[in-house]
Image (cartoon, rainbow, N blue to C red; front, side, top):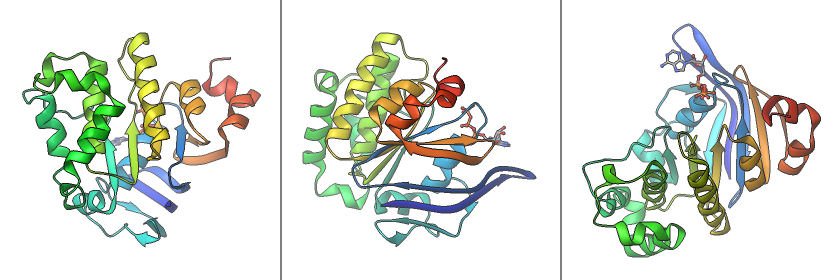
Length: 234
Ligand code: ATP
């Protein structure tokens, strides 16, 4: 449903992505694994329209999106949760969530989307009036993902959601992501925590120096000796 063909991206002279091909099916969770600097964040930024990338085709649900601005891509159904979350600390949980409901595609279903977010992240329900800066890192990450879900996306792009969280919060975050998956929202997941990420996913891509060097089912990647050596700390 999300299709990216031959995507290349540059920072000045430096080419960060070289002809990346990638698909995420409806309701599918797909992992992108790669070392630091492999181009994972760049890939998500290009899909969200936050960075100019060249590609032969980028489409969502069969409709081209490569010519669209970031806000138009949100309207088309793409939501990015950037590394570092991008929540507004001085605003309450509820205010942050409602900011996510701003796109036209989400306005009519605001209350339904809020109910769904609170079902996915029950911890946020009792904290709706709390200002976000007073919450733990894991809770703030839930606000960030909840806000993205308020735009009623077809595809959620998650950049390192577990970064900086305690092991307990990481476990809780992945439980929440399981519920997001079970709600049939497609997810493209960039994660240092490769094992958990693959356990949640149906498929994965291996990115090295801006190139896709492998792609397979998550089960096959988890079982692969090379993947275990390179990404799973075996
Ligand atoms: P990490 O896991 O460390 O976040 P990543 O896989 O997300 O890494 P990117 O952030 O996409 O990697 O970076 C890909 C390449 O592009 C790297 O070589 C990086 O140094 C370079 N790069 C990223 N952002 C910029 C920038 N703003 N200006 C110049 N080069 C950049």
